[in-house]
Length: 510
Image (cartoon, rainbow, N blue to C red; front, side, top):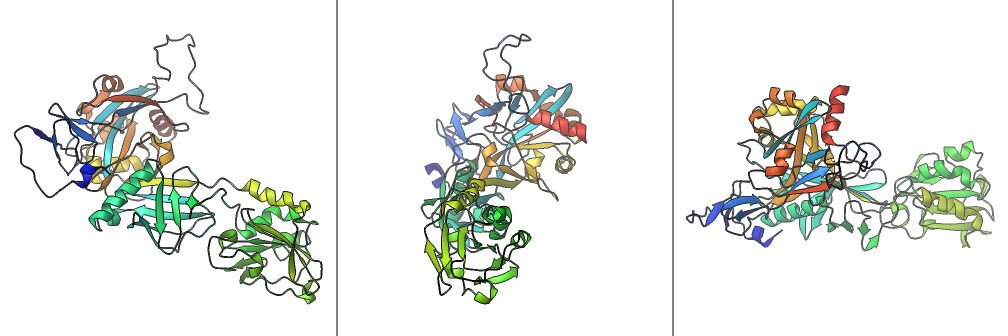
């Protein structure tokens, strides 16, 4: 955060200094801003006695839909206007738009544009979210920390470890209890952490009784100083199922070491179907079903997300009465294929490591080839509360019903969002699909996120929208808004549909 936010004193009402400072009404902080200076959030400034929004209003230009087709160059139907991108598919985002929080007046921009003969309206505003958070998915089979363990940034609690999902460790960060329910430092650090993650910048997180991990949306995690490369191909049992045929007739036994489910091919259903013979192997763990074992080790940073560096630790004595014999061959491998070893039983039926045979190398490489790149995924999650909705319509609940009824399409900086079922308008968005630096903050503290609502004009009027405030895209581009917004154009991120056309298709499909 900026030094200005550190100086923020929300409870002290400063006197009016006779016009030398202007009071900003964009958020509850209501800073007095001197000429040429910015407010505590750096988002608004005093320029010649007027409050202006410091970031430009971002207008996205969409290429032709589907498959990322480029705009035809001088196709003969129109003259080139000098633009390198298609200006016929513009979308005014809420990035740099400003806000009306608390929403006692209409949203900063309510924009009309015709699409395939239908008049559509887009309402844009920068929402202030005190109740928001991020969900972080870290692709790794390594143990980052116990479930519910506190996650810290710069020593402050900013979230916790939640349930691991298949091949990934999950973190839940932010939320109102960290933003406003703890100490002042906790709130500031939490807000800074959320904004850093949402703007796709790296940040170091420390998990109590666990690992230190550097997280950056769309990049591989760095765990305790070591960069992760692969997301595991599956659990040990799944790996057996996928590759049992690759190992047939090449080795007598295969064990895929995994913290969750360790697989043994000779006992596994896949091995039985292929006619695998018993080997007298014993796994130290809790047997679930044939060939599937739980809790072979504590979770850690070793083989397959366990604590072990020597896979033989999970083996008990081989049983000659059940098939063990001198010379029996054994492959042990992890779920990413990064660790592997080859062994043969000696005269005493003890496994002895041998040089890795070339005949098995291809099957191990096949596991590696089937692993996807390890990435960090960051989803911003927030709820469009009643106050924000009041900037869209005089009867806020109508907007909720319109969103839930698919009459209104919600975007975040032009990126599609997932709307949760149930009450309210609770959204999630993949931050890698939003434009650069789409998120800001206010020092209350809260995160500022762009949000846009697109619907048919007649539907907007019916739900109590501010019809008199509707303007055209051309007018927005020409004159900006109340905060003297600068305008900046950019190409829409690849893969994002043009929101007005997307809503029109949804409306026709209902």
